[in-house]
Amino acid sequence: MTLRGRNILLAVCGSIAAYKAAFIVRLLKKQGAEVRVIMTPSALGFITPLTLSVLSEYPVYHSFTEDENGSWNNHVDMALWADLLLIAPASENTIGKMVNGICDNLVLSVYFSAKCPVYVCPAMDLDMYKHFSTQENILKLKEHGVKIIDAEFGELASGLVGQGRLAEPEHIVEFLTQQIGSDAPLASRKMLITAGPTYEAIDPVRFIGNHSSGKMGIALAIQAWKMGADVTLVCGPIQEQLLKNIPAGIQIHKVVSAEQMLEAVTAGITNQHIAIFAAAVADYTPEEVSPIKLKKAEDSFTIRLKKNPDIALICGQNKKADQLFVGFALETNDEEINALKKMNAKNFDAIVLNSLNDAGAGFAGDTNKVTIYSKNKDAVVTAVQSKDIVAKEILTYLLSL
Ligand code: CTP
Image 1: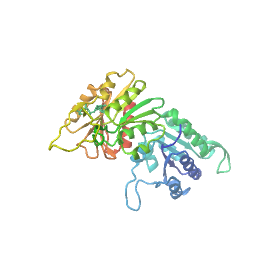
Image 2 (image 1 turned 180 degrees about the vertical axis):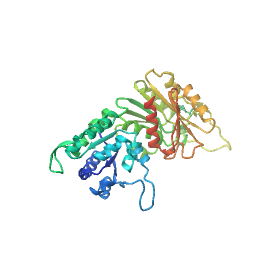
Image 3 (image 1 turned 90 degrees about the vertical axis):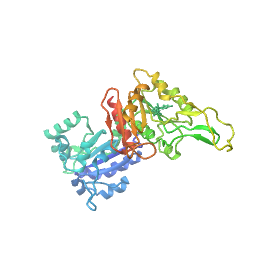
Image 4 (image 1 turned 120 degrees about the vertical axis):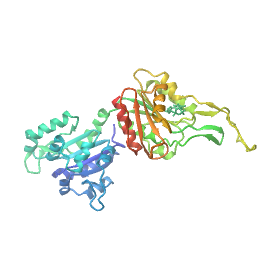
């Protein structure tokens, strides 16, 4: 596993080891991770936000609001952006507050909002580190799933020698690289995702298509891959630029028509654990495709269409007991009724409803708002958010099934 393409949020606390945060940022970036930094107010005494901002290439935040214009530094968005929250160095004070639900700075509010794996690297003097209260707090964090990258032995800022030094930046990054594979919630899961529109040829230059951009399916593929899944993306015609942003680890099958999409999907569906049918497949295709460009002649013109194969329906009919299939429904009216009908008809375990009545939702834009229904769990409604964050929420919901 590599850290390439992962969003890592580094939280720096007040400790002399805070200067090592600069090296951590450098090493993470070298591995190809996107790194953003937040700081506690007391970390500001040890290293400047400017240093960390230049190295990370993002603004560095340390308070709930910006002093100059009073704007809110949205801790919920920061937490949702992160694939991994790394608290390094983590001071005695921050560790204690994490355990006791004290939320008096930006770092803590991000921690309490985070849904991603959290890694804590303690750093303090040896007697503080040995103190029963520190050790009990660290144990409690571990019991609640927080990963501890233990303090190391050596010379401390006080001149004393013992355990308490922040783990060396190289060790922290090695630890993350090794852990991320086995920790990943979708590790060793195979997932197939369909995305984009299909184009149904009329003649060599014309087609029937739709406005699907493929962005939602691609966001799902990238997030699933980040969560450790082995992802196959079967994608209709979309902008080349979008394809360029897809990590190399994702297998892409480019198709044009519904017939080609069906062929690519059926070739690979049997050994998938999860399939998400996010493509906007054309329901109909011309009965005949003219081999030469059609010329305009009459005042009106009719194309006879025949039904395309329903890829999700065909797969659903052959679904095995250990497979989880998820569909999408784009509706303008009777949204819930129509979505639930589709879930049952196509044998989906869950369905993601896009209502065109919701502002910020749908095909082409960069945001979406969805409702996720399933056979066994309560529905979940997301806020209008970037498609990346909606994708994470959909996958988190699927993990709960
Ligand atoms: N789908 C598919 N193959 C098709 C049509 C749809 O795989 N030929 C999948 C879509 O990817 C989506 C789900 O089925 O996950 C619902 O698609 P939709 O077109 O909304 O449903 P239809 O059953 O075609 O209903 P409608 O009459 O609303 O078009």
